[in-house]
Image (tube, rainbow, N blue to C red; front, side, top):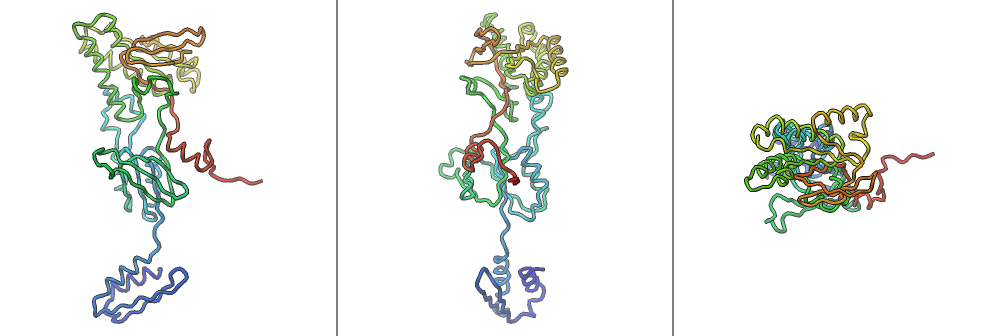
Length: 358
C-alpha cells in the first residue's frame, strides 16, 4: 500500500487515534510537513490534501468514435488513466449497413450505439465532448477543438485540451479527386446522415417525376440514378436501390416505373476490381440481368446539378449524362487535420511505430 493510500485510510478509519498528527512527506526534491489537530476538525482537510499529492493519472485523449476508437476504449484499463473523447459524432455507427439504410431495409437507429452508453459500461470515468478537432499541436501536446452543436455560442464553441497520449481515430474523408461540382451536387455515403439524405432524395426524384407539367425527358432525367465508383459501397448501394425501386417504389409510382435507370460508372476495367475476378464477373452479370447499366473505363471530369460529364478512356470522347441524383463512392482520403499533424511530426507519408536498427 502506498503512503498516500495508507494515510487516507488511517484518517478515515480511526480519526480518534490521531489527536495530533505530523506527516512528513517528500515531494519532488524538498520536504513537506502537514500538521493536523483532530480537535479542530481538520482531519478532512488533511485527507483532501493527501489526496491532492497523489500522482495524477496520465491523460489519454481519443479523437473519434468509429471502429478504432470504440475498440480501443473497450480494451483500455479506464481506471488507470484520465480518458477523454472528442468527436463530432456522439455515437458509433455500424457502417457496413449504411447502404441498407438508404433504402429502408434497415432503420438508422438499428445501426448506431450512443457513445455515452459505450463508455458508461466501462469501470471508470470517461469524459466526452461532441466537437471537431481542428488542429493538433504535437509540441505542446494539445488539440484545438470546436463544437458545431450551436453556432450561436459565439466565443464558447472553441476550446483546447492537453494530452499525455493521443489516439487519432477520426476516420477518412470522401476522396473527390478535386473533380469540379462533386462536393456541391453529389451525395456521399459515409455517415448515417448521408444515408438518410439519399433516401429522401430518391423519394423526391419520384415525386418530381410524376408532376403533370414535366416532359418525358425531364421525367427520365429525374429517375436516372447514377453511382460513381465500383467498389463495395457503390455496388451494394446499387443493389439495394434496385430492390427498393422494383419492390416498393414502382407500386407507389406505377406511371413512371418504366423510366427508372440505374447506372454505375467505374474508371477501372471492372467493378469490384480489388476482389477476385470471379466475384467481379458474377456481379457484372447479375447487374446485367437486373437491368443495371455498368460503364467501365470512364472517368468523371465534372458534375452539375443536372448532368455529369465523363471521359471514355478508350476513345477520349466526352459524354454528358443527365441525372436525378449522383452517389459518389470512389474511395477515401486523409482528413486535413491528420495530414497537418503528420507533416508537423515529419512523417507525411506514414507514422513510424518502431525504429529498427541494424
